[in-house]
Length: 152
Image 1: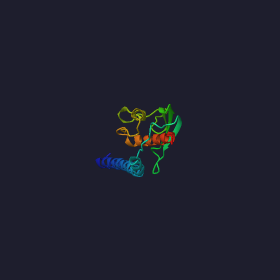
Image 2: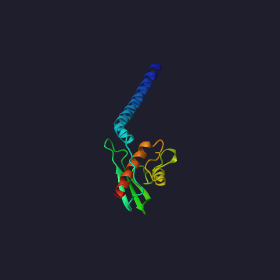
Image 3: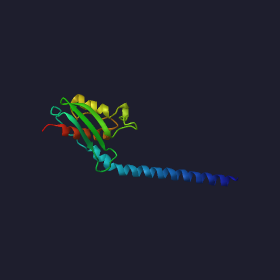
Image 4: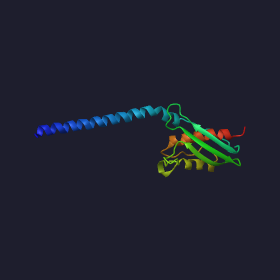
């Protein structure tokens, strides 16, 4: 095989590799562009105050459903016993394949966030760094459940 033929073969290989990289990059750019409105929606969520002193006993389900995209839709179940939160379960959201809370950044999970809520008796807690949007979506679902539990 001549050097000229070898060079042409290498050039074709590089063209194919660059084309594949280009297609992948285009896919990533399109994916990011399509999810941007949903990320912005969650980022701008406001978490309202809930009066933790006025919670009725029972089990309540709250959810957050995005209007721009559904990648961070969440659903939680809150059990109130003796006027206090006794249990919070994630029904939909940051769960692993076995249905357990998924590990987020820093080895934390949404249960750690919920523990902060229970301890401080407030939804105005620090979100998990590196998982801000996931944290906010779960806090909004929890807020919606607790609003159902509030005594009028």
